[in-house]
Image (cartoon, rainbow, N blue to C red):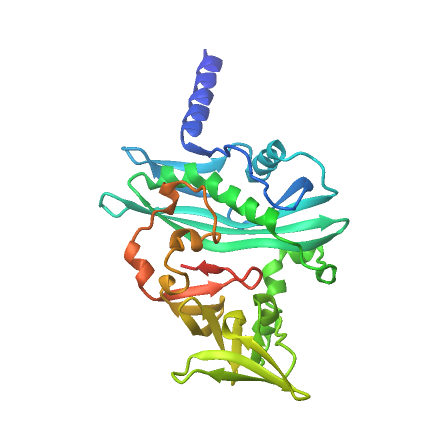
Length: 337
Protein backbone atom coordinates (compact mmCIF):
# COMPACT_ATOMS: atom_id res chain seq x y z
CA UNK A 1 0.00 0.00 0.00
CA UNK A 2 2.84 2.36 0.91
CA UNK A 3 4.49 1.65 -2.46
CA UNK A 4 1.23 2.48 -4.27
CA UNK A 5 0.83 5.75 -2.37
CA UNK A 6 4.48 6.57 -2.97
CA UNK A 7 4.01 5.94 -6.69
CA UNK A 8 0.91 8.14 -6.80
CA UNK A 9 2.80 10.91 -4.99
CA UNK A 10 5.62 10.75 -7.53
CA UNK A 11 3.14 10.81 -10.43
CA UNK A 12 1.33 13.84 -9.01
CA UNK A 13 4.65 15.62 -8.44
CA UNK A 14 5.82 14.97 -12.00
CA UNK A 15 2.39 15.91 -13.42
CA UNK A 16 2.33 19.12 -11.41
CA UNK A 17 5.86 19.99 -12.58
CA UNK A 18 4.91 19.34 -16.20
CA UNK A 19 1.91 21.62 -15.88
CA UNK A 20 4.20 24.43 -14.70
CA UNK A 21 6.12 24.40 -18.00
CA UNK A 22 5.36 26.40 -21.14
CA UNK A 23 7.33 24.89 -24.02
CA UNK A 24 8.84 26.86 -26.88
CA UNK A 25 7.95 25.21 -30.19
CA UNK A 26 10.25 25.76 -33.15
CA UNK A 27 7.83 25.59 -36.06
CA UNK A 28 8.36 25.60 -39.81
CA UNK A 29 11.59 25.66 -41.76
CA UNK A 30 14.47 28.07 -41.47
CA UNK A 31 14.58 29.87 -44.85
CA UNK A 32 18.00 29.84 -46.47
CA UNK A 33 18.01 32.42 -49.25
CA UNK A 34 21.64 33.32 -48.78
CA UNK A 35 24.93 31.92 -49.98
CA UNK A 36 25.89 30.21 -46.73
CA UNK A 37 25.74 26.42 -46.79
CA UNK A 38 26.89 24.58 -43.71
CA UNK A 39 27.32 20.97 -42.71
CA UNK A 40 26.12 21.13 -39.10
CA UNK A 41 25.05 23.60 -36.45
CA UNK A 42 26.93 23.84 -33.18
CA UNK A 43 25.19 25.74 -30.36
CA UNK A 44 27.22 27.17 -27.48
CA UNK A 45 25.07 28.18 -24.52
CA UNK A 46 26.94 31.01 -22.80
CA UNK A 47 24.01 32.25 -20.70
CA UNK A 48 24.85 32.95 -17.08
CA UNK A 49 21.22 32.39 -16.12
CA UNK A 50 19.77 29.36 -17.91
CA UNK A 51 16.18 30.25 -16.94
CA UNK A 52 14.38 31.90 -19.87
CA UNK A 53 11.56 33.26 -17.75
CA UNK A 54 8.67 32.47 -15.39
CA UNK A 55 5.63 34.24 -16.81
CA UNK A 56 1.85 34.52 -16.19
CA UNK A 57 -0.36 32.61 -18.66
CA UNK A 58 -4.10 32.43 -19.26
CA UNK A 59 -7.04 34.09 -17.57
CA UNK A 60 -5.93 32.87 -14.16
CA UNK A 61 -2.38 34.22 -14.66
CA UNK A 62 -0.84 30.88 -13.76
CA UNK A 63 2.94 31.21 -13.42
CA UNK A 64 4.82 28.86 -15.74
CA UNK A 65 8.46 28.43 -16.56
CA UNK A 66 9.25 28.98 -20.25
CA UNK A 67 11.65 26.37 -21.60
CA UNK A 68 12.70 24.32 -24.60
CA UNK A 69 11.55 20.72 -24.61
CA UNK A 70 15.02 19.15 -24.71
CA UNK A 71 17.13 22.20 -23.95
CA UNK A 72 18.08 25.13 -26.14
CA UNK A 73 21.18 23.52 -27.70
CA UNK A 74 19.46 20.28 -28.69
CA UNK A 75 16.22 21.88 -29.91
CA UNK A 76 18.00 24.47 -32.07
CA UNK A 77 20.32 21.84 -33.55
CA UNK A 78 17.38 19.53 -34.38
CA UNK A 79 15.39 22.40 -35.90
CA UNK A 80 18.36 23.38 -38.05
CA UNK A 81 18.99 19.80 -39.17
CA UNK A 82 15.37 19.37 -40.33
CA UNK A 83 15.56 22.55 -42.44
CA UNK A 84 18.97 22.21 -44.02
CA UNK A 85 20.53 19.49 -46.12
CA UNK A 86 24.14 18.61 -45.52
CA UNK A 87 26.35 19.98 -48.22
CA UNK A 88 28.68 22.61 -46.87
CA UNK A 89 32.21 21.79 -45.81
CA UNK A 90 32.12 24.27 -42.92
CA UNK A 91 30.13 24.29 -39.70
CA UNK A 92 27.86 27.03 -38.40
CA UNK A 93 28.35 28.03 -34.76
CA UNK A 94 25.79 29.99 -32.74
CA UNK A 95 26.80 31.48 -29.38
CA UNK A 96 23.86 32.33 -27.11
CA UNK A 97 24.73 34.99 -24.54
CA UNK A 98 21.25 35.92 -23.40
CA UNK A 99 17.64 34.91 -23.96
CA UNK A 100 15.38 36.22 -21.24
CA UNK A 101 11.63 36.94 -21.18
CA UNK A 102 9.80 39.06 -18.62
CA UNK A 103 6.34 40.59 -18.27
CA UNK A 104 5.08 43.75 -16.61
CA UNK A 105 1.35 43.69 -15.95
CA UNK A 106 -0.08 47.16 -16.42
CA UNK A 107 -3.58 46.62 -15.06
CA UNK A 108 -4.88 47.77 -18.45
CA UNK A 109 -6.01 45.89 -21.55
CA UNK A 110 -2.45 45.25 -22.71
CA UNK A 111 0.54 44.09 -20.70
CA UNK A 112 4.18 44.74 -21.61
CA UNK A 113 6.62 41.98 -22.46
CA UNK A 114 10.38 42.28 -22.79
CA UNK A 115 12.74 39.89 -24.59
CA UNK A 116 16.49 40.27 -24.03
CA UNK A 117 18.14 38.74 -27.07
CA UNK A 118 21.89 38.28 -27.61
CA UNK A 119 23.22 35.81 -30.22
CA UNK A 120 26.40 35.63 -32.28
CA UNK A 121 27.13 33.54 -35.38
CA UNK A 122 30.46 32.23 -36.65
CA UNK A 123 31.61 29.93 -39.41
CA UNK A 124 34.00 27.20 -38.27
CA UNK A 125 36.65 26.05 -40.69
CA UNK A 126 38.97 23.51 -39.13
CA UNK A 127 39.94 24.86 -35.72
CA UNK A 128 39.36 28.53 -36.59
CA UNK A 129 36.26 30.70 -36.47
CA UNK A 130 35.21 33.74 -38.48
CA UNK A 131 32.46 36.18 -37.54
CA UNK A 132 29.20 36.19 -39.53
CA UNK A 133 26.43 38.05 -37.70
CA UNK A 134 25.16 39.05 -34.27
CA UNK A 135 22.16 40.67 -32.64
CA UNK A 136 22.31 42.16 -29.18
CA UNK A 137 19.12 44.02 -28.40
CA UNK A 138 15.81 44.11 -26.53
CA UNK A 139 12.45 43.48 -28.20
CA UNK A 140 9.31 45.02 -26.72
CA UNK A 141 5.80 43.58 -26.96
CA UNK A 142 2.35 44.79 -26.01
CA UNK A 143 -0.64 42.47 -25.85
CA UNK A 144 -3.35 41.22 -23.51
CA UNK A 145 -1.77 37.75 -23.53
CA UNK A 146 1.79 38.99 -23.95
CA UNK A 147 3.41 35.89 -22.42
CA UNK A 148 1.69 33.67 -24.96
CA UNK A 149 2.57 36.05 -27.80
CA UNK A 150 6.29 36.07 -26.95
CA UNK A 151 6.56 32.31 -26.61
CA UNK A 152 4.60 31.59 -29.80
CA UNK A 153 6.55 34.12 -31.86
CA UNK A 154 10.06 33.37 -30.63
CA UNK A 155 10.61 31.00 -33.55
CA UNK A 156 9.91 33.90 -35.96
CA UNK A 157 12.70 35.94 -34.36
CA UNK A 158 15.11 33.00 -34.38
CA UNK A 159 14.23 32.24 -38.00
CA UNK A 160 14.94 35.87 -38.99
CA UNK A 161 18.22 35.69 -37.15
CA UNK A 162 19.26 32.58 -39.06
CA UNK A 163 18.20 34.21 -42.33
CA UNK A 164 20.47 37.19 -41.68
CA UNK A 165 23.27 34.79 -40.73
CA UNK A 166 22.92 32.88 -44.01
CA UNK A 167 23.23 36.09 -46.02
CA UNK A 168 26.23 37.37 -44.07
CA UNK A 169 29.71 37.04 -45.52
CA UNK A 170 32.43 35.91 -43.10
CA UNK A 171 35.19 38.31 -42.20
CA UNK A 172 38.49 37.77 -44.06
CA UNK A 173 40.91 35.06 -42.95
CA UNK A 174 43.11 37.59 -41.18
CA UNK A 175 40.34 37.92 -38.56
CA UNK A 176 40.37 34.23 -37.60
CA UNK A 177 39.36 33.62 -33.99
CA UNK A 178 39.94 30.87 -31.48
CA UNK A 179 37.24 29.03 -29.52
CA UNK A 180 38.17 31.06 -26.43
CA UNK A 181 37.74 34.34 -28.33
CA UNK A 182 34.25 33.51 -29.59
CA UNK A 183 33.20 32.39 -26.10
CA UNK A 184 34.32 35.75 -24.72
CA UNK A 185 33.59 37.78 -27.82
CA UNK A 186 32.56 41.01 -26.11
CA UNK A 187 35.99 41.28 -24.53
CA UNK A 188 37.51 40.80 -27.98
CA UNK A 189 35.33 43.56 -29.47
CA UNK A 190 36.10 45.91 -26.58
CA UNK A 191 39.71 45.90 -27.72
CA UNK A 192 38.78 47.61 -30.99
CA UNK A 193 40.59 51.00 -31.22
CA UNK A 194 37.31 52.98 -31.21
CA UNK A 195 36.66 51.62 -27.70
CA UNK A 196 40.21 51.21 -26.42
CA UNK A 197 41.75 54.48 -27.63
CA UNK A 198 41.17 57.63 -25.64
CA UNK A 199 40.56 59.76 -28.74
CA UNK A 200 39.05 59.03 -32.16
CA UNK A 201 41.06 59.73 -35.31
CA UNK A 202 39.83 62.65 -37.39
CA UNK A 203 38.74 61.77 -40.91
CA UNK A 204 35.97 60.14 -42.87
CA UNK A 205 34.83 56.53 -42.57
CA UNK A 206 32.81 54.82 -45.30
CA UNK A 207 31.52 51.88 -43.20
CA UNK A 208 31.14 50.68 -39.63
CA UNK A 209 34.12 48.32 -39.81
CA UNK A 210 36.58 51.08 -40.71
CA UNK A 211 35.20 53.33 -37.95
CA UNK A 212 35.38 50.83 -35.11
CA UNK A 213 38.83 49.69 -36.23
CA UNK A 214 39.80 53.37 -36.71
CA UNK A 215 40.87 53.20 -40.33
CA UNK A 216 39.89 56.57 -41.85
CA UNK A 217 40.15 57.06 -45.61
CA UNK A 218 43.70 57.73 -46.74
CA UNK A 219 44.43 61.35 -47.53
CA UNK A 220 43.88 64.75 -46.00
CA UNK A 221 40.16 65.31 -46.58
CA UNK A 222 38.52 68.69 -46.20
CA UNK A 223 34.84 68.83 -45.31
CA UNK A 224 32.86 71.16 -47.56
CA UNK A 225 29.45 72.39 -46.41
CA UNK A 226 26.46 74.12 -47.93
CA UNK A 227 25.67 77.69 -46.92
CA UNK A 228 23.40 76.47 -44.10
CA UNK A 229 26.14 74.31 -42.61
CA UNK A 230 24.90 70.96 -43.88
CA UNK A 231 27.71 68.67 -45.04
CA UNK A 232 28.03 68.50 -48.81
CA UNK A 233 31.10 66.36 -49.41
CA UNK A 234 34.66 65.52 -48.40
CA UNK A 235 37.46 66.55 -50.77
CA UNK A 236 41.06 65.38 -50.92
CA UNK A 237 43.49 67.25 -53.19
CA UNK A 238 46.66 65.41 -54.12
CA UNK A 239 49.09 66.15 -56.98
CA UNK A 240 46.64 68.67 -58.38
CA UNK A 241 43.82 66.11 -58.55
CA UNK A 242 40.71 66.21 -56.42
CA UNK A 243 38.96 63.17 -55.03
CA UNK A 244 35.41 63.95 -53.96
CA UNK A 245 33.25 61.78 -51.71
CA UNK A 246 29.61 62.92 -51.43
CA UNK A 247 28.08 63.06 -47.97
CA UNK A 248 25.62 60.21 -48.61
CA UNK A 249 28.56 57.79 -48.99
CA UNK A 250 30.08 58.76 -45.64
CA UNK A 251 29.10 56.47 -42.74
CA UNK A 252 30.76 58.55 -40.02
CA UNK A 253 33.11 61.51 -40.00
CA UNK A 254 35.24 62.61 -37.05
CA UNK A 255 36.14 66.28 -36.61
CA UNK A 256 38.26 67.49 -33.67
CA UNK A 257 37.80 64.09 -32.02
CA UNK A 258 33.99 64.21 -32.21
CA UNK A 259 32.16 61.65 -34.36
CA UNK A 260 29.03 62.35 -36.42
CA UNK A 261 26.86 59.55 -37.81
CA UNK A 262 25.05 59.73 -41.14
CA UNK A 263 21.29 59.15 -40.76
CA UNK A 264 18.18 59.67 -42.85
CA UNK A 265 17.70 62.94 -40.93
CA UNK A 266 21.28 64.12 -41.57
CA UNK A 267 24.52 63.78 -39.60
CA UNK A 268 24.03 63.48 -35.86
CA UNK A 269 26.46 63.64 -32.98
CA UNK A 270 27.66 60.24 -31.81
CA UNK A 271 28.03 59.64 -28.06
CA UNK A 272 29.94 56.99 -26.15
CA UNK A 273 29.06 55.08 -22.98
CA UNK A 274 30.24 51.90 -21.29
CA UNK A 275 27.83 50.03 -23.61
CA UNK A 276 29.26 51.48 -26.81
CA UNK A 277 28.53 54.27 -29.30
CA UNK A 278 25.00 55.62 -29.55
CA UNK A 279 22.78 58.34 -31.00
CA UNK A 280 20.54 60.36 -28.71
CA UNK A 281 17.65 60.81 -31.10
CA UNK A 282 14.16 59.75 -32.14
CA UNK A 283 13.99 56.38 -33.93
CA UNK A 284 11.83 57.89 -36.66
CA UNK A 285 14.71 60.20 -37.67
CA UNK A 286 16.93 57.25 -38.58
CA UNK A 287 14.82 55.78 -41.37
CA UNK A 288 12.87 57.00 -44.41
CA UNK A 289 9.08 57.35 -44.00
CA UNK A 290 8.24 54.12 -45.84
CA UNK A 291 10.56 52.11 -43.59
CA UNK A 292 8.87 49.92 -40.97
CA UNK A 293 10.37 51.20 -37.73
CA UNK A 294 9.38 48.14 -35.74
CA UNK A 295 11.16 45.83 -38.16
CA UNK A 296 14.01 48.29 -38.54
CA UNK A 297 14.83 48.09 -34.86
CA UNK A 298 14.96 44.31 -35.09
CA UNK A 299 16.74 42.92 -38.13
CA UNK A 300 16.65 45.62 -40.77
CA UNK A 301 14.43 45.16 -43.80
CA UNK A 302 12.86 41.75 -43.21
CA UNK A 303 9.35 40.46 -43.60
CA UNK A 304 7.13 37.59 -42.69
CA UNK A 305 7.00 38.29 -38.96
CA UNK A 306 3.64 37.97 -37.22
CA UNK A 307 1.79 41.21 -36.57
CA UNK A 308 1.60 40.44 -32.89
CA UNK A 309 5.37 40.40 -32.66
CA UNK A 310 5.61 43.89 -34.08
CA UNK A 311 3.31 45.58 -31.61
CA UNK A 312 4.83 48.31 -29.49
CA UNK A 313 3.84 49.15 -25.93
CA UNK A 314 3.84 52.84 -26.72
CA UNK A 315 3.75 53.84 -30.40
CA UNK A 316 4.60 57.39 -29.37
CA UNK A 317 7.98 56.09 -28.18
CA UNK A 318 9.06 56.23 -31.82
CA UNK A 319 8.82 60.00 -31.48
CA UNK A 320 10.73 60.32 -28.20
CA UNK A 321 14.47 60.73 -27.98
CA UNK A 322 16.34 57.70 -26.68
CA UNK A 323 19.74 56.05 -26.82
CA UNK A 324 20.08 53.98 -29.99
CA UNK A 325 23.34 52.04 -30.22
CA UNK A 326 25.35 51.07 -33.30
CA UNK A 327 26.46 47.47 -33.30
CA UNK A 328 30.24 47.42 -33.94
CA UNK A 329 30.05 44.12 -35.84
CA UNK A 330 27.05 44.76 -38.10
CA UNK A 331 26.50 48.52 -38.20
CA UNK A 332 22.82 47.95 -37.32
CA UNK A 333 20.87 49.94 -34.77
CA UNK A 334 20.07 48.28 -31.46
CA UNK A 335 17.88 49.34 -28.57
CA UNK A 336 19.13 48.83 -25.01
CA UNK A 337 16.85 49.12 -21.99
